[in-house]
Length: 344
Ligand SMILES: [Zn+2]
Image (tube, rainbow, N blue to C red; front, side, top):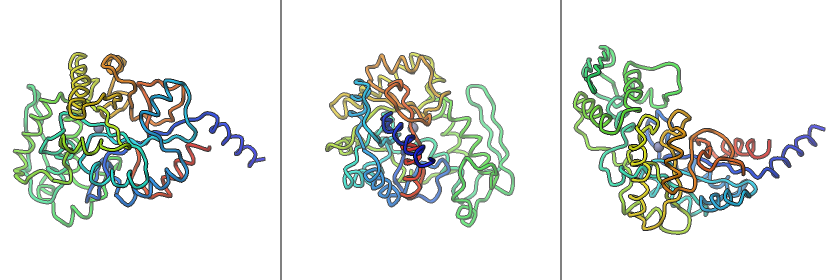
């Protein structure tokens, strides 16, 4: 009876023809990854193997066409990447090619060719690398004063501590040191700021930290030539992820429009082809509004993706398509999750 019920359940899922959209950021092997953005190349290979074995990898163009026709494929799975890290070209593309899996990379257009790091990476590097920081951090942003005391014990951060806490991530309830507390505090302050304010704050924190080392090569966003090479071939499509990766809901509508349409035209100039899809930065329910959705539609996109977890069905709103964030799991762990989504 149980088996029969399971079978009926599986059949229902089959006939529903849902699509799973997976969200990756980076394919890289790094020492610490507090926001869990990286999947190692080995795990990513296993993931693509799994998708080929139990799913039906589709491209963004296929998904867009399917949504237009209200007809979705069986066990369809779309691989997406956000942000536009150079490791997408050097580490992910060869693996996608090997398994012939399509993917779409949503690029934050103003970061293309940027010699520094994405702001969240730089903040991590300034706060959570071994060395000495001043005990007090005080600054003013648009007249609002901020004051932090790092505490004597966290002024010096040793190589041993760095090694010991390298697997810490933001979801953990306990903070290993005051540095981690300050890092999360600053992250929360910087995240909703408009681009200029964020840059200003980061410059103050950089100056305070005394850090003079060059940006980390492994964290580099793609150059325009790299975006072109990434797009080259049949498997990879490029979508827009705004210009400067702001929290769109925090911006006036005209600035949102500039971020949305501006990034579309910048990427179209780089690739000389239409950019048809968009991903909301951060992508949570509070990170964009109905106005944002309207602006994305008006800019001429066909679809847009959030980071809300869920399956894409034929009734899904094309401008609020859900995605599943993928962690640094091995192939078996990913397969278990996908089977659960597809068959249960
Ligand atoms: Zn992003």
